Length: 148
Image (cartoon, rainbow, N blue to C red; front, top):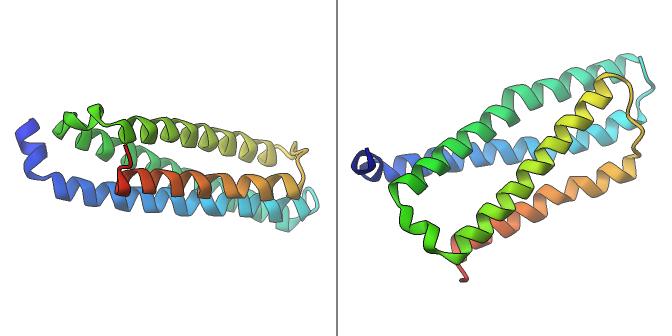
């Protein structure tokens, strides 16, 4: 199996990158929807529209892309287990755990909006809108530069 994975490594890597781009697009857009949703009156047509948009973004784009990114990333590690001996990979995996936690928080907050139970401000979501960007920059630089 490892030989098969290594033979198709570049295909797997390409699919991993596509999944990561899709995941990040959703992770960058969802908190922006939260910012707009905070300003919509509860039970208004606008609020209900945001609920649909947030649910679909999470279930149709973010969650499947996250699973695909983990799957293809895991296959790359299986094909090339020597990556586990690299310090940058340990740092990258640690940041991926943090990104997964942020994903979980976004999911929780989406459910709060769906139940009209959000108590957080637009300013709060503006700050959280930047967290995936910072994590993405660090993860990409670790993967490309391999500083240690």
